[in-house]
Length: 184
Image (cartoon, rainbow, N blue to C red; front, side, top):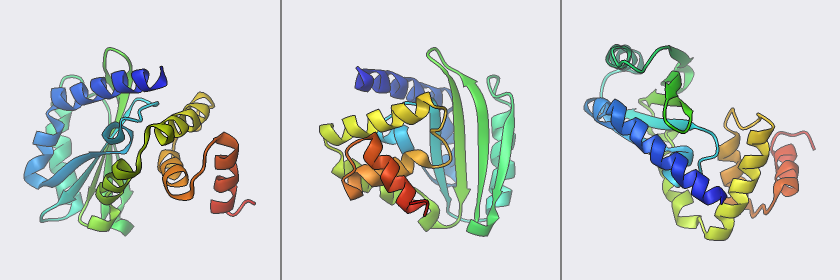
């Protein structure tokens, strides 16, 4: 059931990306790919992550141009820009893009630094995702989403915990998280 819901959310996420022509819009700037839960079909929370590795230029100039392209879209209301220039990156956030199933948050990470993209991680995760591991990831993500705590990179930590450290449930993940964050 959870996987069916994830698949329905993923389908809508892809429709949102198509409606905005997002990947086509970003293509002239460099390599743009979906990453995160949409790329992995592990969608619990309605958010879309796109990473853009610039082929030339700087993140600030590209961000300005991309914002100009996005702001003229009818369904894009508010755009937020976050500064991660210490990592050669900026993030454009669209907080509320209405779909049929949900209102979507869209984050576009723009960088000149290949190591700050999620491209390699997604490929590795796809290779290591079994049906059992998918179920575990979905259960953990659902647990934190229902507590409104599925944010700030927690999904990526869940993927690493399950796929690399063999975590098999919420309690084990909490122990893993405590160790990773130095709380344990």
